[in-house]
Image 1 (tube, rainbow, N blue to C red):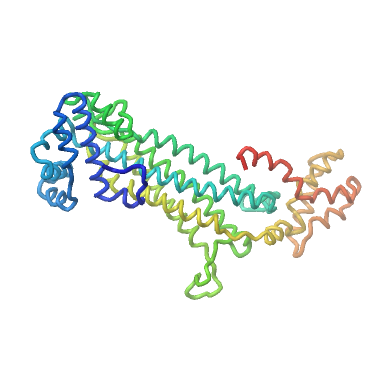
Image 2: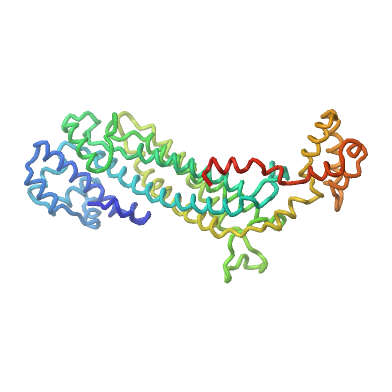
Amino acid sequence: MIERYTLPEMGAIWTDTYKLKTWLEVEIAVCEAQGELGYIPTEAVEEIKAKANFDPSRVLEIEAEVRHDVIAFLTNVNEYVGDAGRYIHLGLTSSDVLDTGLALQMVASLNLILEKLEELIQAIRYQAQQHRYTVMVGRSHGIHAEPITFGFKLAGWLAEVLRNRDRLLKLRKDIAVGKISGAVGTYANIDPQVEAIACKKLGLTPDTASTQVVSRDRHAEYVQQLALLAASIERFAVEIRNLQRTDVLEVEEFFTKKQKGSSAMPHKRNPIRSERLTGMARIIRGNAVAALENVALWHERDISHSSVERVILPDSCILTHFMLKEITGLVKNLLVYPENMERNMNVYGGVIFSQRVLLALVEKGMQREDAYRVVQNCAHTAWNTTGGNFRDLISKDQTVTQILSDSEIQACFDPQHHLRHLDKIYQRLGI
């Protein structure tokens, strides 16, 4: 029997051995249910539980002859059980075992992913607290916009991973579904009570209305949610990559003492982990498309989905788990450079405070279009002039100085104004 309270390694969940263990667990749960309802002798159930086993290599040997994985498995199990083995798989079809066992694998994988996601949540939460008031420039279209804090940026990441956690918790319930309803799902040769009892033993819920298989919209949602989590991780990785650019250098991936960035250029410190995460997200997104293709099966079932799932489910789960481990390490060890943030924020003499000057002029009675034209002219002059200084240009502009005092102008360049409501966001996140 599988111990679901001690989580195995992610890769182990998708081995043939673990898969066959889930199949055996399903078969035994069904036998126990059959025994409780009086369909098979209780002594036979006890004998099955005591003797049932399998040898993965022997299963493959049999499968090479019979060309059917479940029959090969059952043949091998009966080699261990003997005469009582005739009660195993009564009234079942292969998909009862395959899909119910697969649900156990998917739930186990999701438990590991949620465990790693919690570590990422805590890492982001900590850094958001540490940099709550680390002022930097916000950017839109890649262009300097207005002041924010690095902690505020991280608060957005935290809110996003919390949403991912909520979605995955719901997903765990939606995917924890089994079916023990026989060929085409009509319960013609199996009592629905057997399904109810067996699924309860397995920690699953009976599917509402399965065909011969559990409908693949559930599995498609599973991979899509993993792809969505991967997309969030990619967003964080792309942000780190952009902020690590030489001309920005506001944050940087931790670079170990003996690490080398380039075979040709000794100075290079490349954001290789972030780039790796970006690439992996593409794979999981592609798998989500394949999972959607699996939804449309012929009639009550075919097996066109099976070969696809043997690739996309292990790969998506293993990749997602690895991505969470990588991004958590990145966030925990991220190098943050507040001095570079301050330098970048004040380039061109604080041009990012243009809206504050605009609003100050409007509040003093100037028409908005006129104020916009004056401020934009000073801003663009500073932007396009070597060593241009927006604050100096504003302070010397006669149109501005006739309306605003020196102290009023200087107040426009105080970054604290932009941070005055950030605490409300932190309060929403409980940090």
